[in-house]
Length: 184
View (cartoon, rainbow, N blue to C red):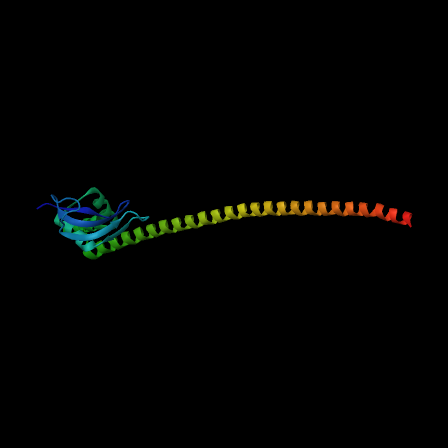
């Protein structure tokens, strides 16, 4: 029986989530499978992979043929590197401890790189939020200035109207006062 390592789709419409499974080559994509060896979530950034490394390595060494996407996933997780290193151990190029050291060094470098990417994304997100906040502050200041100008103009108009009214009253009282002593 020819076995394949493939993705089995799950999740809802527009939000795919995959299981990494071992299945007969003749089985449909979402049909029966022999073993589930992990999950793959392409919706996160970077994509999240939860893989049973030992079982994946076993199946690759047994001869199961992965699909293109699964091959890329396994390669990124280091399954193919470990298979290559184990081949070197079998040929006598180096011992098991050296192979494990090389793999651990590769894995540490990979983790360091992915952490740097996450930090960059977090920093960019923070900067974008700060820029949006600064832009919003400028807009709010402009609105506050317009409101202050409008209130100042209204206060000036009210003061002008009161001054004009007071002047009219003063003008109306002045002739009345002049007329009052003339009558007496």
